[in-house]
Image (cartoon, rainbow over all chains, first blue to last red; front, side, top):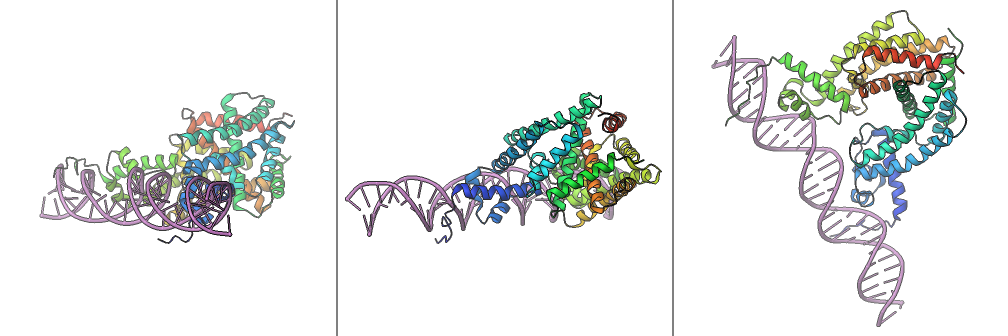
Length: 203
Length: 203
DNA sequence: TCTATATGACTGTTGGGTAAGTTACCACAG
DNA sequence: CTGTGGTAACTTACCCAACAGTCATATAGA
């Protein structure tokens, strides 16, 4: 039987993997794990489904690979900023700015770590937890610092405030996805203005 | 053929509908639309799947019914508070308090309106949009008020701030779901303390 | 007997995952 | 400079489980 396209493209595995990860990250990040189909990713990449399974083993394996690639750069950037000497709100703003700059071409990467439709058990949950924890830990550390300065060291308060902070970052990333023409710099300026509106000396 | 249970329960339709809506709302609200299966709802209710289809027509119809029931009370409460004379942060805190009190037994109801796994086209999207808009409009109105007081009337700024505000409510509801022993009153007190930590006169 | 309440058993589709084979290319023996 | 065998890249066609949705039928009570 004639299979006119089998094996004829000759794209090296590593190149193909990068291409697949780019497309998969975008799909997972915008639609969520559950709503993303492997077949759709294959079609967007112009290849067949089995090639993806050959390279990544399973849908979860593919998601994990996306996480590993995206998580590394995001966590490193946040850690870099955490090593600086900014504290409280200032540290928060620096972190936000770092995220905007880092994720300028692909704000959806942020959502990989907090996708509620990802499986909550199995190896993927561990992997998600790893990065979510790594990011969450740093967030919690920053929040705890701020709260301590304000004289509040209640653990549940800190936990709730961390959740709120991550929710704020989340919603800003969502908003950015809905306004793709905004540059990172514009987002940073906008956040400054929002902060001003909250903390400026008005009644 | 023997069907020992068919038609023997004699539960009036309205009672059954309420029971189904209770269970469905909880499942949709905690797992999301996509991850919830009608069969699972039927099993939890101790009835069969066709009865649900008989009463609600489709999975989307069931979701819509959940929305209508939940949306009505949530939107009304927010509107009630909006009619009051609180403005700015104060109005925000009152709204939060109202939500906590209203949703004390079922914080997951909040998530029905902002479920990203719900279909984005068709009648369900309209229904979701209806309530999300109704809630979003009031949020935007409150945010615009606050921003105007601070001298900022930029539309995109207001849009972003509204998104952040809804994200804050969202993350507090999520946190509450993870800490089911907290009472509404405790949540309100906690939010007060978080607000203090942010706006108190510390360095 | 008529109607509301209810069900077991089915269908069709979607989507994750797989088996088996095809094509191109490269290394190397003759 | 040719065959020949191994391997990497790739595909078609399929399997199977989960799940939305349906049909025909059964029970109980007015």
